[in-house]
Length: 382
Ligand SMILES: NC(=O)c1ccc[n+]([C@@H]2O[C@H](COP(=O)([O-])OP(=O)(O)OC[C@H]3O[C@@H](n4cnc5c(N)ncnc54)[C@H](O)[C@@H]3O)[C@@H](O)[C@H]2O)c1
Image 1 (cartoon, helix red, strand yellow):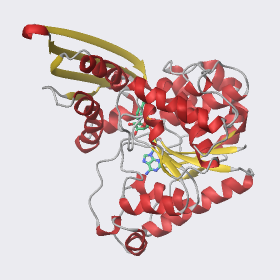
Image 2 (tube, rainbow, N blue to C red):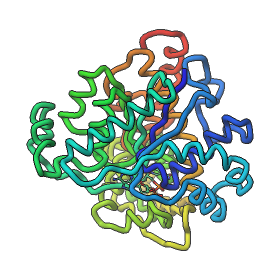
Image 3 (cartoon, rainbow, N blue to C red):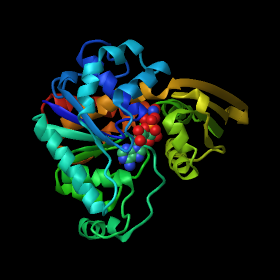
Image 4 (cartoon, rainbow, N blue to C red):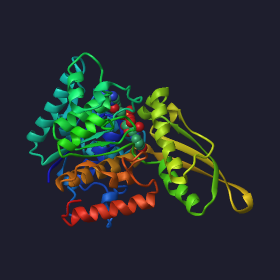
């Protein structure tokens, strides 16, 4: 099942690490550490193999992929020998990267993306192409009447307005090209009524939002523990210090607000109340792709006795995110092949702000994911 993985933001840190990792797995040069689809509970015949994955994508930036891989190797994100060994494979992927369209109306830009996706699918005789958004985080979308339904959207896109934020314009183009869509970022993406309706009309599945790789991953394990032990969480404050392109983007207050909202949701929805405290994100250029998150939790037990816990997480963001990007591409491709349509709530395990998920608890999300992949492997309509 030859499957295209089309990355929006293809020259970014997460995308480059996903491409290098995917090529290394295909060549048998590395172990699938961090790829949950390779765990015995999830692996099976419904998922495309790593050797079936073909990479392409769009980016505004023009830095060659090999250069981006070398920069990440210098920063300790990936082994330097991999970038060198895979130079020919990286050059082949470079041929599949296209400039992000600029200028003209949004309808014209979307048509360029649709044509790029269709040509990629045809050139490589792919069964399907999964579009994965790993582009820079955007501010929340400004409301527009064109967001309401497909007809209003089409009419508005042909005019001079910037109707959709970039993530949603790519999502629209993905749907128009018949491609399932995954949003690994907190941006709007497919979360507009017109786009959701179009995806269903085109029989497409989609997944999101915002990969759960660090502090929120730990929160989604700890918050259910406090809830299940009936302990009263009084405050939960977190500080995230990060560099890299993502950190630089999040230095912008509007992008930062979108990310913080996505990170806090797990607490309110798991505990049933919002404790005091906030999550803050601070850009520290020196940290590069390595992030430090420090959380302080105060809570009360029996007879109101006050207690506290704190944790510190030192993660390499792109190394944590890239295997999940590969997992999501494989699972979404399999869901599409099985005829699933609409939001894939069973993939909530991967996201900070999951679509339509009944739970934020990591263990419950894991159970739903295992059952879902079991149905896919059994050949049932997942
Ligand atoms: N690394 C993690 O653990 C993690 C977890 C959850 C979410 N994310 C999200 O993944 C995304 C990527 O993170 P990153 O560290 O790779 O960031 P990055 O800044 O390194 O990469 C983003 C890329 O997107 C490109 N881009 C920006 N606007 C574009 C457009 N309109 N069209 C096409 N390309 C465009 C940029 O040129 C850049 O190459 C961010 O939104 C981040 O919030 C990352």
